[in-house]
Image (cartoon, rainbow, N blue to C red):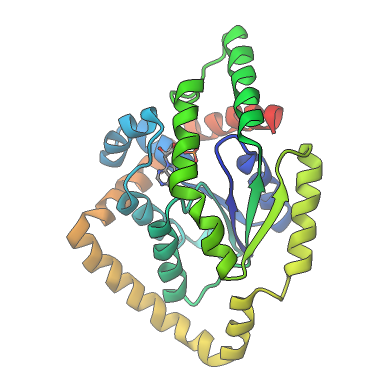
Length: 268
Ligand code: AMP
C-alpha cells in the first residue's frame, strides 16, 4: 500500500502515519524527519536546509526529490509506504509520479486531513506554551510566528495538490479536527472503500503481466536517469549525504521521534 498524507503542519499527519505503519506494516517516509536528521548530522544537505527550515520555508525541490528517490529504493519500502510531508509542491508531485512510474508502482490514495487553520494555530500556541512551561525543548520551527509562515507556505505551495490529486481520482478527504481515534477510523473507512477502485490501480491491472515485466526495465531506467540527473543538480550526493546523516543519527532520530510522537499524540 502506498499512500500520501496531505495537510498543514499540526494537522496530525505524523500521528496518523504511525498508526498506518502499524496497521499495514508499511514504512513512514517523512521528509521533515530526514531533513532534521541531516541538520543534526551536519551533512551538506543539512547545512543547506537548516536556516530554510528555521524560517519555516520550503527546502528546494531538487533536494527533497533526491532524498525521496533514494529512500523509496530501500528494501524496507517493499510492502509500501506512507509519505508524510512529501510532496509539498506540484513540482514534487510530478517528480513523484515519474519516480513511481519508472518503478512500475502506483499510489493507492492521497488522504487529506482537513483542518480549520485558526483552531489549529490556537492549538499550536497552547501546546508551545505548555511545553515551554514544562521546560521541554521545542523544535526550532515550532514557534507561533514560524508556524504562521509554515501555514502560509502550505496554503500557497501545497494546497494546490488537493486539486492535483482530486483530478487523478486519488483524493480522499477526512475531518482532521475530529478526535485522533475518529480520524484513524475515518482513514480506515476511506481506504476500505477505495480498495481496488483507484483509477491507477485499475489501469495497472489492465496492463497486467506486461506492466510487471516493465518494472525491472523501469528500475534500470530510473537508476540511469537518477545518475544523469544527479550530475546536473548534485542531487544524488545530496541524497547520499542525507542518507549518511540518517544512519549516523539513528539513535538521536529515534529519541527525537519518540519525543515528537508524544507531542503529536498530545495535540492530534
Ligand atoms: P515537517 O516536519 O514535515 O513539518 O517539515 C519541517 C520542515 O522541513 C518544513 O517546514 C520544510 O522547511 C522542510 N520540509 C519537509 N518536507 C519538505 C518538502 N517535501 N519540501 C520542502 N521542504 C520540506
